[in-house]
Length: 280
Image 1 (spheres, one colour):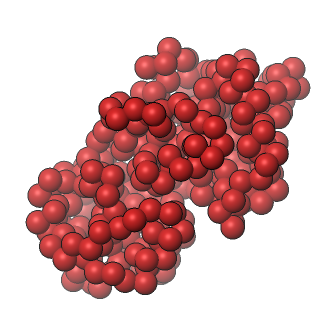
Image 2 (cartoon, rainbow, N blue to C red):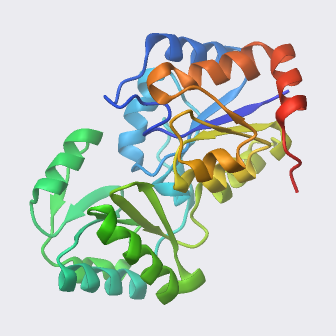
């Protein structure tokens, strides 16, 4: 029934220790062998997502930067890219400096910070990517950014999100990817829009897609997929819009979903018929 499955990384495919179980890798490879297009849909930069794709044997184009970039693992060409405008980028850099909130930015698949802070170093180590220090982020912003990421405590980021949504309206897409991560991308750069673009390019209908995620930035992914699956550890807002809730990321929730809806199609079809919501 399903020809494509798009999987979030942090909190979904990856455990809390940022690992992937051998059983989950086997399930993904079996799905690919059956002809299913398996891709990643993540807020991470392409170079970080590519490492994980290579680890599990995924060679389909990857949805990265919250949907701001789609690029194939083995090709240099970018299939889809949407950048935050230079004016919004500059305003966000100024705001971060004024309020002393950590901000890191992405341009040409390079991670930049204004200084070598603990947050920047910890992030780069966690996702296994290098970083560059550029004190003049304002100058860098003249060419726009693929993504901007604020890192701070929820009591700082939650009101900031509301403020930015009021300030920029539909000129930017603003979403929490973790409780202490607030991400800003182009308004057309979300996982759902990118998913439909990729599916259309591959000749796959929306009804033939499964989307799996756990956090607020996965909402559009689940909404646009023909069948949306929330992880057991997902925030309630994501569970509320999902067709099915799987096990947690620490309990092989992705493997469970693939087994149920891809590798065991008869059981998956029955479950879908019983629990699926009507897609508009």
